[in-house]
Amino acid sequence: MREKLGFIAVGQAGGNIGKLLKSNGFDVVFINSSKGDLDTLNVDEDKKYHIADGLGCAKDRETAKEIAKNDFNNINDFIQKGLKNKDLYYMIFSSGGGTGSGISPTLAKIYTKALNKDVGIITVLPSEKDTLQAQINCYECLKELTEIENLSGCFMLDNNQKNDIEHINQKFVRVFNKVFDYKKYETTKGNIDEAEILKLLKTNGMINIVTCKNDESTKKLIDEINNSIFAPIEKDGKIKYLGLSRGINFDDKMFKNEIGLYLDKFENINKEYTLAILSGLTMPFKRIQNIKDKITAEKETIINLNKVTENKLEDISFLDELTKPKDTKVKENMTADEILANFF
Image 1 (cartoon, rainbow, N blue to C red):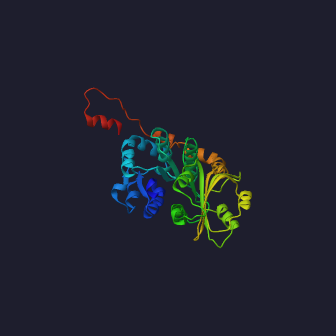
Image 2 (image 1 turned 60 degrees about the vertical axis):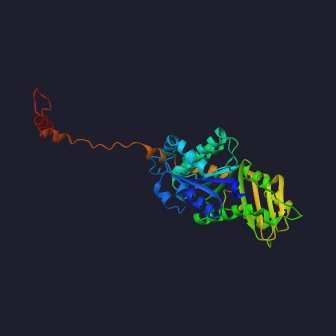
């Protein structure tokens, strides 16, 4: 089923996650405004695209949008050529950056509305220790994403959850990869099929994937959900679909009481580990509100830093009195040297 998914890794953060997915057998193309960032990726050249006139965007979302707009036809041709016959596309990017944050929501909107494609999101939220610009970019990016109708599932990796960004990326790819091992665990006691996996991935809303060992408990699975690499889930008790490949003795009542109710559950028996896929979760508004609050608290600082400073020096007035002013009047038939002498 991996061949039915196509990944569009945009920007440096997107590229870092994309190369891990590619090493696990997924089809990935890489787009960046910085040729230097693309050159660090050890992938085939025909899977990389440098946006025309791109020199990097230095966390400037508007610059990213502008250069992508001017080069859209080439970008689209590159994606269509590199990712043929896909049932689901994923945009991968950092919400706090420039290139990925600026371009990806617009590409997702075009692909869902104009090209009638199913598009999911894999994005990274900045840590609270990241710069104010990263927080501003993140909020503006997420606002644009929430305005896209018919978007498929969204994975929000949260750099606030762990200190090690590379660890977050690797863990995400590891648990995401396990989703596609469902055929290994087909038994007469229950199966999860391809259509159900696609439903879990395509359902609008947030997605959270966690695992635990089979000698652990439902409580441990719940702890993993509450302390995952993803943005904290809202405590509204709403899950649309639950995918459960389980080896633990699953306590459904405990799960519903502590995490939430689900409309439907797709389940199989797994003798190696337990995997839970929570699909159709509410947007993590509390986490996003924290980002907004951080920006609002620094309102005056942001305004002052964005003011244009007058960088001219004043004259020392008494010195003008000591210097005879030059006659800068240009007379008829003056040579170029004579004109310059009048001014210098």
